[in-house]
Length: 390
Ligand SMILES: *Cc1c(COP(=O)(O)O)cnc(C)c1O
Image (cartoon, rainbow, N blue to C red; front, side, top):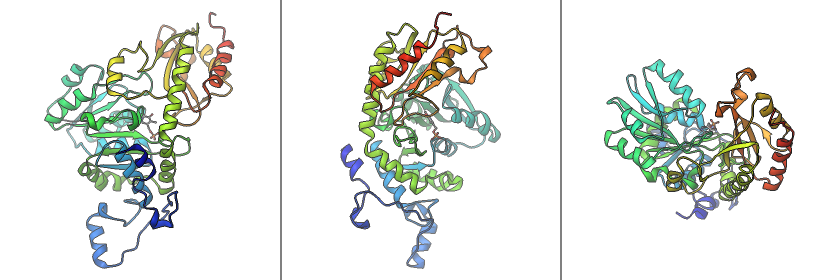
């Protein structure tokens, strides 16, 4: 399907709302039925029509259609945030005694679900180095129900070979789930490589304006229905109509924003890697990246999130650098209009800073929609505020 059609027309029924170009926000909790028979049908199958907004809602429906099409999927579900989407996707596959294989160090809240919540229900997780096909395969047990992937991740960008992993999981009846937030469906389509469920955090590029959270699952109609009928309805984690409307608005400009953010990131990488205070760039489309070939093979593009390592000897140097930035903000999240920086050592006590540990010297930069020269000037003046060789 043509991306211009998906973003501008698919799912929009303008004649139903006065031919308005922008869609309405169906801010309603419930929907009236005309007959008892209609009610009966909705009670029996809430996935078939509008009954109550914890289930289906027309504004959310429009978004579901577009997001499914972007991923080349039969169907999509939209949640209130990315963490809720991941939780529902995995929870729907497991029961007591089951086993999960997950990439090491997945997104914080995915890891918490594997470490803190699932063990309470007798579901155990084995973490693997996802860059090794052999290690993923060796971790599979007869009771393995899910392989959980995140490719690339959002700090050091390790990839998994998606086609290979889908190929070993399918014949064993194991469900593969990927957190595809980094690439968005524009630049990586995991379902086409055989992955069962693609998750993405709409909070990032799909929203694009840092004003709402959202989470997406895509997959077969049968899989989405199964998750809808238990986790989605029971946890009540579905997105609200207003937030769905903000995501529809974000989608209109997704290709433009993604391209601008990525192109600016490449410009900044060129400058950063020549700076004497920078020792390394970590970015999947950078020649030095250890999985560069795989990145080029399975990703159509690489977004505006990158990591650079500075030649710092102390926590104070990293802090001074970040606190000297005048325009680039220190904040969590990414994918919005605004550029952001995040020092890895923010989670450390200053005394525990170890210059020999490269991770402590990592800075994650999200490149937003500002002009790259403006951002470089900000980075350059912050580099100058630090005495790097003390
Ligand atoms: C932000 C993020 C999430 C979580 O999304 P929320 O909407 O904050 O719940 C999950 N995975 C990745 C890779 C993220 O960047």
